[in-house]
Image 1 (tube, rainbow, N blue to C red):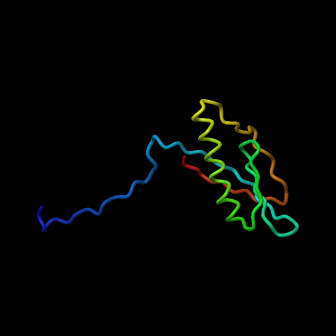
Image 2 (cartoon, rainbow, N blue to C red):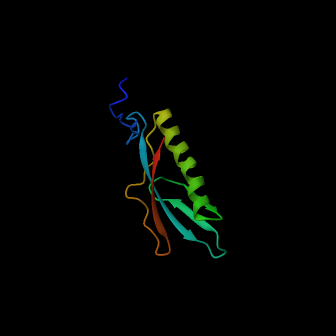
Image 3 (cartoon, rainbow, N blue to C red):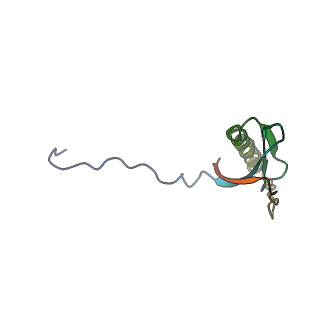
Length: 101
């Protein structure tokens, strides 16, 4: 190797490998009267949970979302997407989470 020629720094990948599926998880968040946070997935059937903070809601929803989608794919079953997605309530905020399996 010639020390007079500059070396290019190693590059980081800019995309996930093609064999890693990615899905969008739409979450609606609201604050309950006692201050806890409620999150419900708007584009996948029957996914809702309550936690102390928004961060905790999102941290707990992602593994549930991954498991549901992975289980459907592994079983060769259709993913129970909601189309159209659920309507957002006025007191809710929308979050979009790209999820890689």
